[in-house]
Length: 460
Ligand code: ARG
Image (cartoon, rainbow, N blue to C red; front, side, top):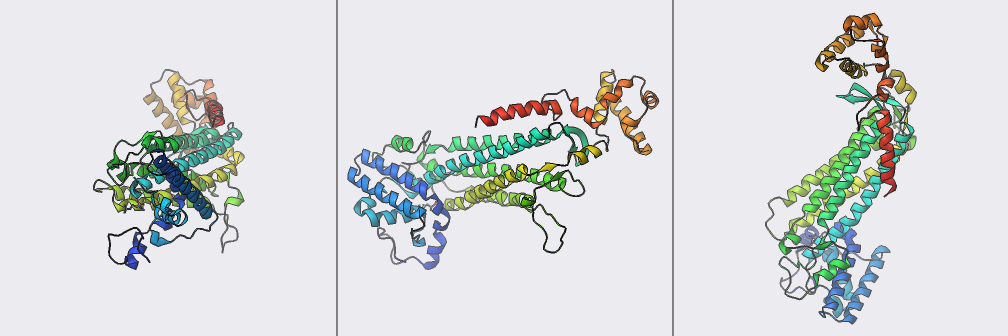
């Protein structure tokens, strides 16, 4: 490997192991579009400031556009001795544009260049991921619309708790993913400042117009401190954290669907096209895609811990440790995006076994809380009511009965204030219709929330 033609400081050639060890081209190759956009904006500004001529800018721009075309067409020869995408593109430009190409790096360092490229890449990536979240929310909402009148059981501690609309269950995920989307937008807003002009660490003695490159590249403003701009990657850690929460939410959804599709539950059917079979057991239909979503959560959490650890105790200014950021940013983004796409597909193809769910819904005393609240309306203190219903449930369990199957005499014996109207508060189907609180998972609130979300998602 030849040493870089322009470098005169070091003697001899770098060790072969060194070349392999320090290169990041294999990882940061995918930044090429952003690197080229940043370089064109920088060169244009250099020409505006008369630091290069208009003709030199034209030659640089032409060369960079050609390089972009070659990379896109798969014709560009990536040479790892160039270290990274920034130097690979610059070296190619010098070959094409000669002297003009050698002027591109005026007033710039790879330190502010890479800080720029990651920001540009993340900005686009976040926009794409927000679109994927919206699509997943739309798929959940469509299913919610289909099943709003069907009742299922909500669980606490994986024990039957209270009856809800199936839509209420599905909408709980629309809410979780909405917060994920807002977090991503917030991350994008915080990092949306141009670091160009920060140079290696302290800025430049040349009269660079930072506002020009900032405007050209669509940033909200310019970074206020060059040391900070080239050395922090807090936004990368934040992005990976946002991806981690997306994965946490996806893994919860995946876990539910895996359980609900088991023979034991038989609440849902997952479309065959999202399942696999077994190489040995001919009867098997396995929810592998969901299990992989659950498993990939670990990949993204790993990236988060890696990113935080890379940042820890780095001395001020740029350090090469930072090069390791991209491996984890890309891994988190790719994994979360692929999982979002997969989840959208799976949700679209899920069907609920409403008859089976309804047939078993009244097992497990899911109307007990509603009965206690009925007693509250009859003037009984809630703690008292809780005790009365608890005893009634114990009695039913012994007699293998449901609460709705107790007769009036049995109710009167438990509490004289209970009247015939008690039966309207019993049974899961009745309870799911009678929730009064805003934001409940009952039928009428779920219907309202479906209308709310339809309007929200239409606007996007
Ligand atoms: N490839 C490096 C990175 O990703 C940028 C190069 C900065 N290198 C340097 N020696 N200053 O951070």
